[in-house]
Length: 183
Image 1 (cartoon, helix red, strand yellow):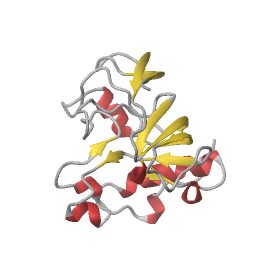
Image 2: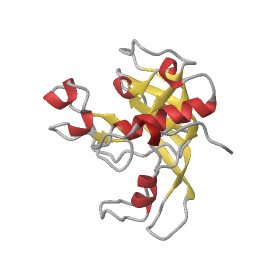
Image 3: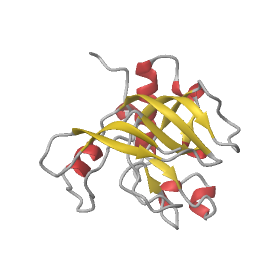
Image 4: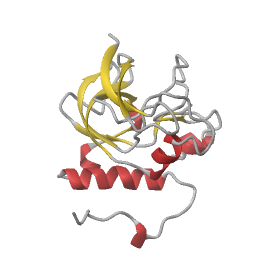
C-alpha cells in the first residue's frame, strides 16, 4: 500500500525547507521499508536545494545520510528483518550487472545509478525523495547493516557520513574522515 508520510522539502531555490507530504511506494520483493530516526545534512543537500547544479526538480526531499529501523521487508529480502537498525547512503539502486556495479562502484554504473533523491526510479520513473522524511523504501542491496553502523547514534551518523564520502571520486585522507562530534 502506498503510504503518505511527512517530510521536509525544498519547494524552490530560495525557500526554506517546509513540511510537505509525500508518498512512499510499498516495498517491492527486494526492498526494505525503514522508519527514519536520523538523517545527516550534507553540503550536497544544500547545493541541490539551491539548484546550484541546475538539475533540481521541486519539490524535493533531500537527505542521503539516513539511519533508521526496518519496519517491513519484501518477500525476497534475506539480510534484514523487522526491528533491525540500518543505514542508507547516497544511492538506492543501480543496474547491478555492469562492471562498475559488480566491482562495488555503483556510483559509476554504466546504466546510471539511482540516487537517494532527485533521480528517476528504475522501475516506475518517479523521482526519488530523500531522508528528511518519516520513512524511506530502499532496495536491500543498498541498505547497510547495523553491525557496520556501530552501537550509538553518534556512531550511526558517522558511519553513513563515511559511506557518503567513500562514494566520491577522490580518496579521502584518514585524518579528514569524520570523527565523533564535539558538541
